[in-house]
Length: 134
Image (spheres, rainbow, N blue to C red):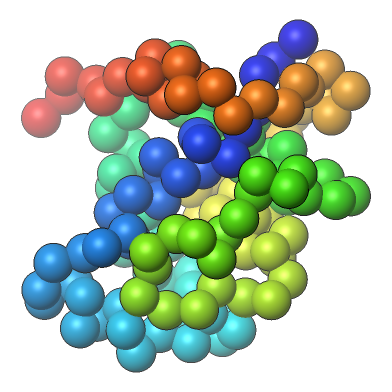
C-alpha cells in the first residue's frame, strides 16, 4: 500500500503558512476563488519548495496530492481551514488539489486510488528529505 496523508500536504504547503513580510502582504490579498491568482501563488511560492525535495520525497508528496485531487470525500483530518494561510482557499478543495497537481507538474501515470492507505502518521513527514542541490 502507498501511504498518503494530509500531513504531507501540510508539509508541502508550509511556505504559505505564517509567512513573513513581504510575502505575507502579497498573500493576504489573494482571492483563493480566482484560479489564476491561486495558480500564480502555487507556481511562485509552493513549486520552488516542492522542487527542493529529493525524488523519493516528491513521490510521497505527489501521491498525497493525487489522492486528495481524486478522493470522493476528504478525510475528517483534512482540515484545510486549520492551516495558517493568509488567504481563504477555494470552497472546492478538489479544485485546489487539482491546481497543485497541475502547477507542481505531478503526473497521474500509474497512480491507483485503490493502492492508497490514508494515514496522518507524522512519520510520513519526518521521512521527507530535501535534495542537496543548490
